Length: 133
Length: 144
Image (cartoon, rainbow over all chains, first blue to last red; front, side):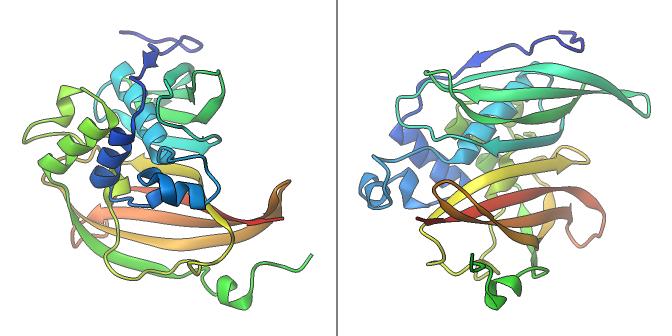
């Protein structure tokens, strides 16, 4: 697929996130903060229950980029965490090419990207730079 | 306002941890891809490429410089950056280190916020040549 400045990246709608996924992500990432896996611990910290690791939403945005371009194409991925994700939330990943840069003759796409929950709130937002070839 | 940044906290700025050795295993990449629900075949098999947030798995063993555990009421992840000079792959052996580059405070609606910025560097094992790096900004909130 070819991309032009201003053009969209193919949108991805993730399967609803689940508590089991948070446990899998805790194990795979090594982040065992109990607010992601233990409802009781999450409630003790003022939450209504477990929430996703922020890094899970960043991983989703990595998927957006490396599906649009190719695996190993990301040069830089930068995000801000703005909101929390709860079990059952459906996260949509979307973005567009902001500009295409020439780095020593190699095209690099700089894209603005975001992860949005079912209510339309942006939970994680950032930019990615990916090699186009 | 009294600063939340005590001399003890201020003294964390400039502290470095590592390098510690990381060996990237194909099975760990596959488990990571499964956990994030990414079916990309490039993340599977003996020559797997690592997804761009895989470096979150590079965790130090043992103590490392950080704010005291009971500092603030809530700990949150503010922002994260990863950069790669080349893709990471199964079989790569890296040396990973990080430095606390800044600690600063802001006053928010819900309370005082203290931010900690850490810069990561990944090099080949035993080499000074950078392969990638990142920035991890966390925050602690002091509820009003």
